[in-house]
Image (tube, rainbow, N blue to C red; front, side, top):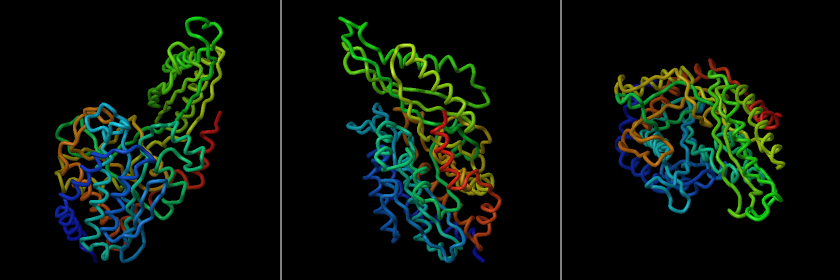
Length: 440
């Protein structure tokens, strides 16, 4: 019988020994942010580290993704530790890429560092030879749902089916052999005594890429000969705002459009105006109901001005939930590393979104939050102030949880899998999104 405590100690010792390297990886990625489906440099770093661990890996999954499997002595279960490759757009961030505006103001660089760190511990400690299942390390592209028009062009070219990387992994079959998944995101906490948090649920959403088309005319000399697509868009967005009192508070609806193109020249009546938005909510049904109101509002704006509107509805993300059995396991491991009082356990609902929600709908999943950062995510003030807490502690905690799941016949992991009821199979999941984006 495997002594779980001894195995965890060996893995943590190995991760600790390599902590400087793990921090260096995280800092390097932080300094070179890349946007979704364009993370080639970051993906190359992952490949180099997989080779260092002696792992064979699949390359080019969902364009930039990489997948490596660490075999155990038996193969009763496959536990996936994920990391997200991409950054967000934040051009005012002091470490933003001056050409693209990309910045790691959401901490995905820490996810890759901690995923690789967990791999270092599991591989170089030798504990996998004592475990009865496998661990898959998965570098996933494109969690940040940005540059919608660009990604929609990839979809229309047949290069991807989904704008989110984990969804694409499901669609291409990269998740077919995985039973349980986890990744650690970074966050700031309202309670300054907390250094990590686990549990709770979050919103899902559907994406919209909207094109208003009018008629050009000289804006000063003959505006009456034009059809102002910008005003049509503004009226449509105003109509959405007027719908807000019809949304139930319990559905936590969030709609936050941006105009990505407002016209071509200031002295020409705008004829080409483009809008991107999410329609977020707590449940799929609430999201679909809100989408109907959003579409109706956008069409009303176009109708009033005599413009045309094309609304492209795109698959977003499902609401996220954390598996309670896995929460219990991971909580204990975090508490052993940073102290019970430093770990927050949440049962509340948050209104952000992650494509980990799609994974949580088909297998047991956790999406804990680590500390070591300050400032608000997705803003210029976001920075990592404690790299050890941000990169190394999550690596240890995830590796320890993998040991819990796979030790002694993988009994705990198999129990968690057997007690989990998936919302979807892969087939019904893909059909659900197809129906959702085609719903009128």
